[in-house]
Length: 350
Ligand code: PMV
Image (tube, rainbow, N blue to C red):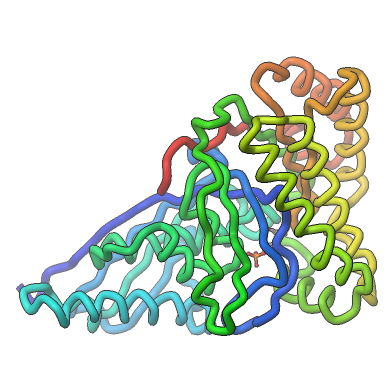
């Protein structure tokens, strides 16, 4: 029995925020300066697949990401391991028949089916999958919201990948972070015609990490104060309302305005940070012309901490949106493979 290897696996999806998390009020606990909302994408296109195992024969914790051994000494990864072990230890303390998995070394093996750190929110799916895989291995009874508290400590945006559909991360106001967690705004089935088109402007590793970009923004941008005090709180209310009412025009306007506000704050830092490039700006113009032609917003662009564009649209407008992109951007240099992969919205939780 002492050579038993215990194992469990899971997949976790990527989420792309429509009201962005940008800024930490506590860097150690990954507590944000504002709440955020995201849409979870289909696992068919973008996901992390993770297996967690443990055994008394393993000599140290390890994490292999896309075939390469990863550094796990960082405080974020260590916090996730520690929190999960503490919860497992509590179960073991209350039931002596349970194997003492909390004292064994962990071996984590993880694979992404998309480029890591290209601004495609790989850390979100990565930490969500890591936390869920270990929670499955430990047979924890914690809800997705409880697990989101742990995933948040790995990477802020990861807390939203514990759910499918439309997800809010409530910033909370407690100093220990115990109320800074994700909850479900609506299931994917509430608005099943939502689609996301991902335009890969560059699959290269991003220039300024989200952690240092956030730090610089909080420290040096004057616009940022306006964003967290007024713009984001208004966008949160408007976005939840748009999702509940399946109001795409409102969803689109708030998404685009919020992305613009986030990138304006980055440009307002000293020295300025630019995540978007000429290809990104061509995508914005393409969305604007699609919407002008339709006479209303049928497509919404949003950009994270990188040049890649995510366009949300409804299935019924597929021809107008995808057609316009292949015309406008098919010949634009810088697009990897022209029009990117198309994703549906995930219908299930991890
Ligand atoms: O979770 P992090 O630290 O990689 O930060 C993600 C920040 C954005 O992707 C730009 C916005 C968001 O809400 O996901």
